[in-house]
Length: 323
Image (tube, rainbow, N blue to C red; front, side, top):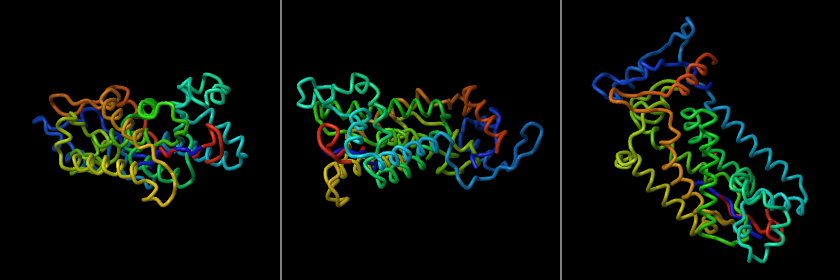
């Protein structure tokens, strides 16, 4: 049975106190970002610490997730075909699992009821091959890292799990009863993109004008989504993202030169969930003067400163859909 894969298509060292992250009194976040960017050092615990951009800027939580993905792929490489099928039956997301009339109902039911629940998340830890894993890792490093710096590890993991589940639910709604397993972290990575686009293009943000130094770049306030999508950079990002996903969804095999299917609906489900959930998880709040941080995020900021993105038969053996 083919498996559908989802394809996407020094830690900052210095801390700013809450007051330092606020914009100028005229309410302009750009003025605050300019002032922050011009500041070359901060006092931490009575010591002066210079802000330097690290060579490798991936948060620990992202590195750990990518290591888990790689470990799972490595382990699968040593499994026999039948054992790998058993693993797919227990961890991959299979829409036929929820259809009692499916011809695979007995086979899928043999692994118990648990996979009906946990596979909404566990499918993200499986990939259709090393190329699929590498592509997803690159996108997670680019966009997941930005979101993880802003959210912190716990919020980032919760956000990723919920949006992975949203991607699976979207695929289930559109492919109910289909026996093809879905694997890959792309639904969650699509949500990382949706969340990151809300602040990375802002003045003072990681890729915006007047980019701030260190972790304060990830504290750029996010505009309401209605305002954000009117920005040319974000509008272009959205057009390119949706066009690329639809293109790969319709012509995926012809473009890549293989017979892998792309679960593009799961990507879109994850992306839309990311847009909806971002304000619920975002610890950076905008007040009438500029930027405000909730206390948990501010404490994380202070702590950080103290230290320096397939194949056999049966329901599990169909080639997975790349997600």
